[in-house]
Length: 230
Image (cartoon, rainbow, N blue to C red; front, side):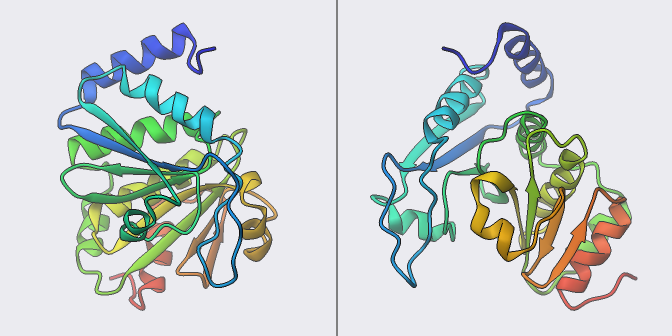
């Protein structure tokens, strides 16, 4: 059974034909079986939706010759996973000639399907819709910032936070931004006290709830980097 119905396929094919510029590689890390969890070692989920995500990405990549899909086994390709600093799966990485810093952990379904499409398009174009002031501020970052955005597929406001985070990752090589499907990672949801979504975590210490304007999101990124908005 296909993941994308005819209407969604047609919409996606048209969007890619009109908006993709440069090639994009989708890198998917998965596992066939649940791994043994060892203290001090990377933690992965049971990858409940790995088959569905793989199928989704296969269907997606078939809609444009500018999209390439590469699939790795998380355990067998542990060294490669370490290169991307992955500690959980299922994981999708969006790559062009460089690692864009864009990550998806969990299935990008529901409203998050559009987050995936927009991330692919932004990466392909090599530019974002962030304001000149935001782009300039991000160029001056001196410290790495890791952004985790917790979402659910039924949250209509989550894609706004996810896209802001992903666009900021595109603008700065020091930023990594991840969509995390809250229900698939209950241990993280509990750790960061995610009571509602979207909830963004910056460098493990700063949290922001809800969908907020770009300038407010930027303030938290700069704060996490030990800087202040100019």
